[in-house]
Length: 273
Image 1 (cartoon, one colour):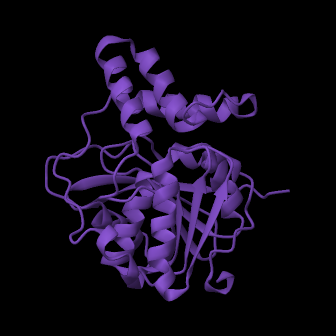
Image 2 (cartoon, helix red, strand yellow):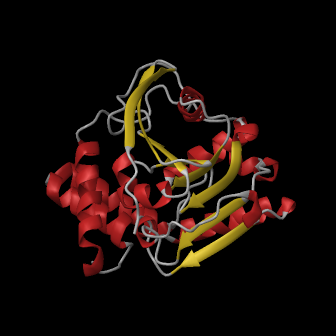
């Protein structure tokens, strides 16, 4: 039986922002980076499981959750650095989901000395083209946002990103599905994301071979096709150092995060590679 770990919460003043964070557990540091329109609550099902073995850090990306948007120039990889150093952590295993995976890639390139390993879960990749199916669904979603109700928009984004495109609702994940929808409800009330955001240049897609950290790439077979393609691109690009591995499961984009909710035995150390 798990021993529930105390959770430390707080804010760090850095790079012109007040960044919300949570820390739980002891051991090697493990940083969790959430996806777009989400926040630290995304990791509720994982926090205590991973905290049995690791010092787990999660934070709200600037513009989401309790970390308010700003109007100053910033980079998310510098925000990640500030969170870790602000907590006295010089090096960590870094796990990112979706947009969080893109942030993790930038961080691994900007500050390679601070990354023990990478776990890229249903990760995006700056510069990779979107599939026709995804473009079609995003257009439909935008129409619902313009002409429909908030509830209709929330249900559609949940179908797209939690259930998976064209997939039925999984009755075994109702609690997680409702949490996902409520997190998005909060995100819908926030200012538009991206004001002042600057991305890494050259882009990670042009320099994947520079990432030296051992990397696990996870993709859902029921996700949009572009995310499966991205998983292949990431794995191929990182194979130059023979330190990458790809795991594909018959699940959707956000449900990957729930599927592994009770797995606290992942080994993120170099010994796993």
